[in-house]
Image (cartoon, rainbow, N blue to C red; front, side, top):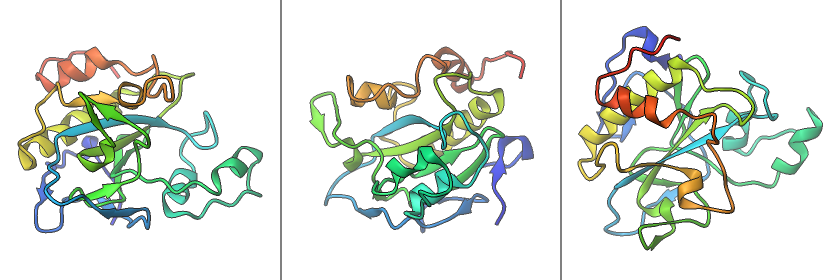
Length: 201
């Protein structure tokens, strides 16, 4: 199935039988596991990623999530070969979405983390990687896509309280992580979630 973006006018919803976004390409990452018994989905963590750094559109983010990085392909990839990471979703620069882990399962995205006194945010969060970097602004298609995806998640998992339950990787791992950096426009995302954004692009 092809990657789907908001620009395709697709109405996204979560299939609660499989815990996958309908109409979105799904590629199963091996880097996942069951959530702890009784863990509810209450938080969404927004990340930023580009691989190699500041390089967009290539296959390497997906290969990272699948554990298939080729260290010989680019000098910047060698340090990623031993990583075992994943995210539930990736939002490409075009606004296309790919899913790697079903939402009811635990993705390996936040690492050592805490939120409001609770440690190990992977237990109770959904991780969304957004293709970008600290050097370049994120794009309008990505914000529009995120707003649609976040509404679908909040509809499916009512303990996700928009917009307060949407945080950055830096928020849950301060001092260790800085993404999605100052290039991510949080006010714009909040306006879109409120149905009020006239920003071009």
